[in-house]
Every structure is written in C-alpha cells, then in structure tokens.
Amino acid sequence: IKNLDQFNDFQEAMVFFINNIECKGVTTSRVNLRFEPNFSSEVIITIPRNSALKIYRDSQNGWVKVKVNINNIDLDGYIAEAYLRRLE
Image 1 (tube, helix red, strand yellow):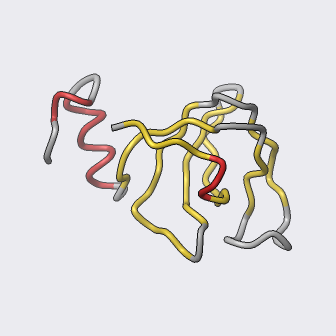
Image 2: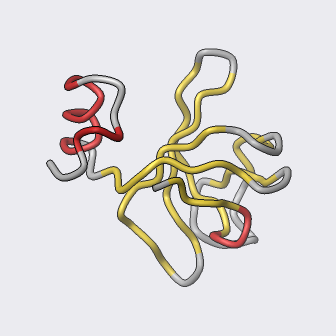
C-alpha cells in the first residue's frame, strides 16, 4: 500500500486496499449520487457540497464510483467526475 501516511490508521489503509479505493475526495457542489454511471439513472440521494468521499478506481466515461457517509449510513454509487475534487 503506497502513501501509508495519508491514512488515519492501518485499518483505514486496508479498507482502501481491499475495496479498491483510489483516494479521498470532496464534492465541489451539490451532486446526485446515482445507481448507474449516467444522468438517466435513478438518484439515490443528493450529496451536499464539500462532502467527503472515498473514490474507487473504477471510472467510466466521466463517471466515478464513490462511497459517501450520509447520516452514519455508507452509500455507494456514481457521480459525474466534474463535481468532485480529489485529495492527494
């Protein structure tokens, strides 16, 4: 696991490795979390601006798979890449 110092602890590093998560990020505006990587897909929830995300390595035509925690519930889905900022 590279850049181990970017994680809070070893357990977090292992979660990123096992789940194929690339990095952390934040939303740059309100954005819809969707079931599929396209604008016609059903919306799971609207994510507020500046929300923390875990970004998976999967990327499809300008869409990225993310994990977000809203009200202590982890949700996976897709957002348009234009609405996120990756944190290195």
